[in-house]
Image (tube, rainbow, N blue to C red; front, side, top):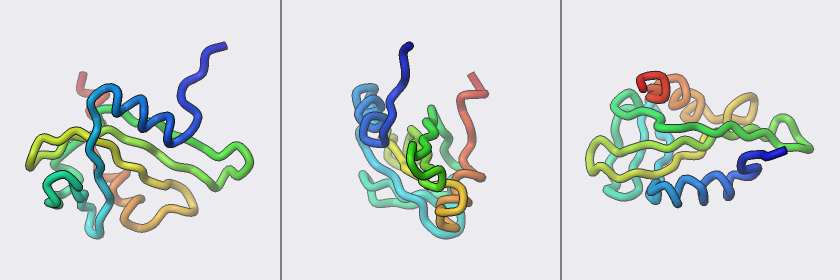
Length: 106
């Protein structure tokens, strides 16, 4: 049986190999920060090229999503790690709700 990446680090390594080498972070008000150009922007201005959901094997509350994005300001391609579920911050939850899922547009 073949399985995909099991850890956040494995997912990020796989995405970096595909050219998503930058990093992004969630900010208040449904905004995303690009750590390449240091600019923030509304999460709705970009979209998820891909997303991987992970759950902790020993702790179901340890849930995270790793997404691949493109910065609308500098075109950097990178990853964002967002917790979801009961452990997520307000910023992470809002970003997940607002980010467009570009996988459906293909």
